[in-house]
Structure formats: structure tokens, C-alpha cells
Length: 145
Image 1 (tube, rainbow, N blue to C red):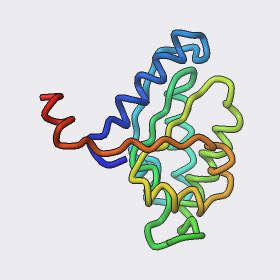
Image 2: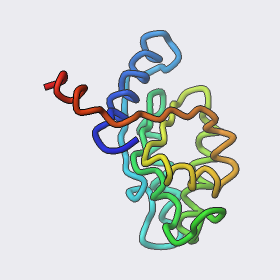
Image 3: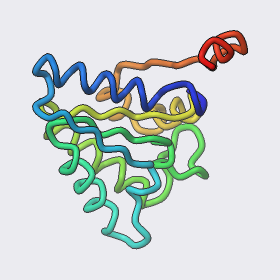
Image 4: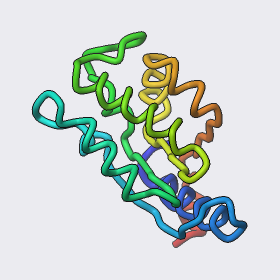
């Protein structure tokens, strides 16, 4: 969804719900931007991804603008540069290795997230659930205010 549609709030509430009902062992929510996980030098990205996963272990790792894990020049069908490949491979490995004690939410614009999921087949398999949050209408915004 677009900015302001409640992606982060929804993910926080979902993580709290899963913790309350014993699915997650910790009531923790770690928020990262996709760009934060990519390093400036070869070999530096995997430790960043692993560190984010370890920080969130038992709770929720929320990756906003997750499409930034894919090189923007990659386009449809390609995950892009070596840093992007390292980030995606490491994330997939960590998600698989910790699937019983970690919730990971990937968030971002619908079209860009679709390109990300098409670029890396493993992401689509490990993140089968999709939820699109529509923009608020002017009437809904007025009611909120």
C-alpha cells in the first residue's frame, strides 16, 4: 500500500496478536528499511541481514520498502546486483532456518513488491500471503480527523 495506509500499524497489531496467542515467543517488533540491509562492500550485506533477523528473533521483522532489496535496474525477472542477490539469498535462508520463531513482513508499494516477488522465486514461495491496504477516501480521512 501507499504511505499512510497503515502497513506498519497493521503489522504491529498482527505481531502483538501472534504473541498474545503464543505463536511468537516475544512481543518485539523490529522495523528496517530494505536499503539498510544492503552494505557498501562485498560480503557486508549478509551480516546486516543476519543481524536484523537476530534482533527480531522470537518476534516480528518488518521490512519497509522491501523492494529496495532488489536493484532498481533489475526490472521484471531479475534481482539485480551482487548486493541485492546477497541480501535476498541471506534473507531467504534466515527465514527458512527460523520459520518457527520469527515473523517477517515485507511491505511497500504494490507494483514494486510484485516485481520483487517475481524477481526471486523463493520469496514468492516463502511469502505466499499478500494483503493490499487501499488508500483512505476523503470521507474516511475526515472521519479519522
